[in-house]
Amino acid sequence: SEWCVLSLKLRGDEPNGATLLSSSVSVACQLADCTSLGPGSSCAGLDSAANASYAFNMYFQKMDHRRGSCVFNNLGVASAEGILVRVKGRWGTVVTVAMAVVWAVFY
Image 1 (cartoon, rainbow, N blue to C red):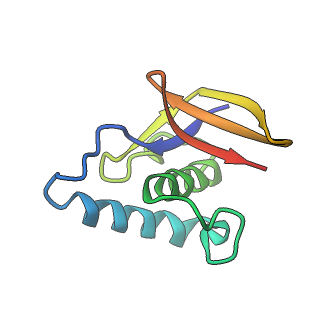
Image 2: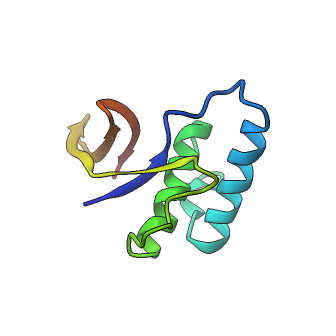
């Protein structure tokens, strides 16, 4: 499996970083299903980095992992390093990039 997640290269102090992130998430969610990020939904409590990773990945999966579908203003990165884990009775996938956890989704 392969996922598209927010790149670890994004830093909060980059000029226009927040604007680029917000617009990239908006584009991803306009073209893919991000209803799980809405208020009261299963992923409503995620931070902005996890929201971006979720949105990027939903679009990436919808596009069948096509080349160029994980770019998002150079904020996305494709990763094949996902680990299935069980925490407190819930199964989830933890996605890593260069050994750093960047996204975890529990079912």
